[in-house]
Length: 184
Image (tube, rainbow, N blue to C red; front, side):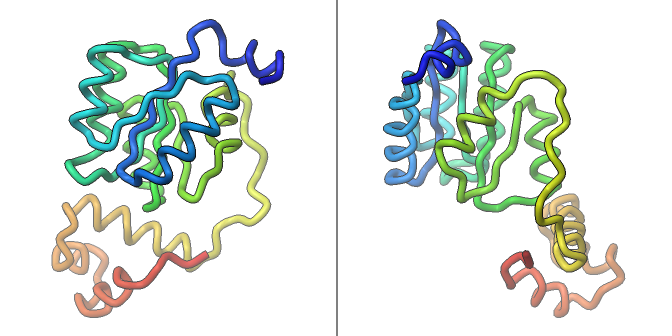
């Protein structure tokens, strides 16, 4: 571990990793340990909340969708027990609506999978209000449309008929769009 990284992390190097993908969370824990953190892992909302209440860490990386619920419940528990905890929400279902929800619940940053240990470290240690550099590859018009549809779909509690009505779109067309992967 470099001296600069140790200074950035600070004296409390505790890190909670919550993800139900066991191989991923174990790899990430090893990589974060090499960077100077003291990781502890959990594979469910219940386990993450238990650790948050018993031993609230200085840093946390929480998956948004877990088998037993929503990772935002862990974020909320961490905020209650340790308000200064730096939390990064990590998910394979990246959408603007979920990013906004994560930040509202108290996440410091939001990363879409696949994210490597360097991305996670940079997000955890980012300080200040500096504006991030503009993206090298901005979203395409198709991606912006897809993001908007996802946001309305989430606002309608994942009800396809209601979403189609609000978007003035045929329900079957919406179902086809939702079944496809997100555009680049």
